[in-house]
Each structure stands twice: as C-alpha cells, then as structure tokens.
Length: 163
Image (tube, rainbow, N blue to C red):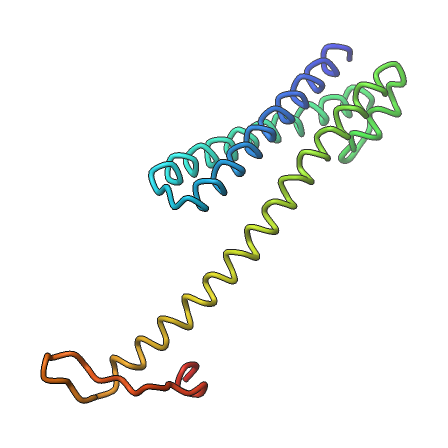
C-alpha cells in the first residue's frame, strides 16, 4: 500500500508542476497577444496543447492509482483524495497539502481562462458586427466615384447592421 501511496503523491506533484507550466504558458500567451507577436503566439499555443495532453495523461494515471488504493482497501466505487487521506492518517498531511496546492493552481488557471474567454467573446462580437457592416455595404448595389471607389452611405442604421 505504501508504494501505491508514493506513486499517488508523485503523480500529484507532477500534476501540480504541469499545471504551473500551463499557467506560465497562459501568461506568456497573453503577453504575446498584447504585443501582437504572432510567431510567439503560435509557439506558445503549441506548448499549451502539449501541457494539456500531459495533464490528461497524468490525470488518467492518478485515477488508476486511486483505483489501486481502493482495490487494496476493498472499497467499491470511486475514492476521493480526501477519503484516501482519511484512510491513511500517517500520510494525511502530505496528501491534503498536495490536494490544496493542486486546487489553488487549477483555480488560478480557471480564473485566467474566464477572463481570457470573456475578452475573446467581446472581440469576436465586435468583429462580427464589423463583418456584417462590411458585408451589408458590399452586397448592396451602389454608386461609384470617378476614381472607382464605391460610394457608401454616410450612415448605416442599427437595423442594417444586424440585418
């Protein structure tokens, strides 16, 4: 049982480290977005995807390790990390510390993603409006100036913008 708990603690440490890397990649991505550095943005996006894949693999390993602990204790069903810690009081402090640290890093990632998602939604909304305005102006037959430039009405009303 001790070896299984050692494996579980090791996997939790790796998960924490990988989540920290993902958080650092997210911060770098936001910096690249602010400076419009497209090559860095592409590179960082690939690094983020690699981190996500490693996290998924580690999460599968964590679930397997918890299932092995549950089998060793003859407990049916899925076992939470808190319950594993309660069943092993000698390892409780370390398991709970790792759990809390992992939750804290995941919370920071979640918060950062929420803000980035709201920003992206806002930018896409503005882009959608601009494209609709442009498409509406292009699809209507209009007059052209002597220089060959289409003459667009000075004002496009709200109904034309969303129509």
